[in-house]
Image 1 (cartoon, helix red, strand yellow):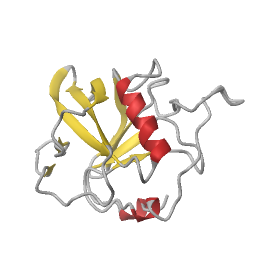
Image 2 (image 1 turned 120 degrees about the vertical axis):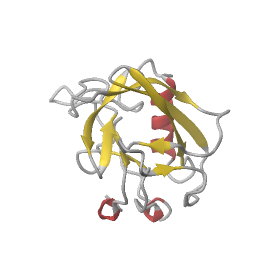
Image 3 (image 1 turned 120 degrees about the horizontal axis):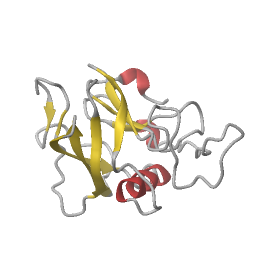
Length: 178
């Protein structure tokens, strides 16, 4: 089984604003500075250094929309930097669906059932860290999954945001507003 690991994660203040993301095996579709400009202001950048089956595969730099979704962006930024004492470093993508997306961020259980946000103060009755509320505003509803390379939070329903996320590999408009 292919294992993609985020061997290192952090903030990317000094890294170019371009996003480089080649996740298809044949490299047929790569995002680069020539792709459409994001619809919201990027307020901070973070990165993952990726390994595939233990071999260095490259760096993914992601722009976060801190003015549009401030709690979500800060949660993701701190989980990349490791500031809270835990985060994405050395975790993997637990779900990869070709021609759709890669899902990661479950650094507690590693199988898609766990994770923890920076806002989680306690565990729920099932022993899982509590999630934080969705940030639905007029501005956040304008964000779309209309191209490959969109970074989004993955959750299990309303107000259950934690640390899990996905990166699209194709346009996924059916995910808009969810």
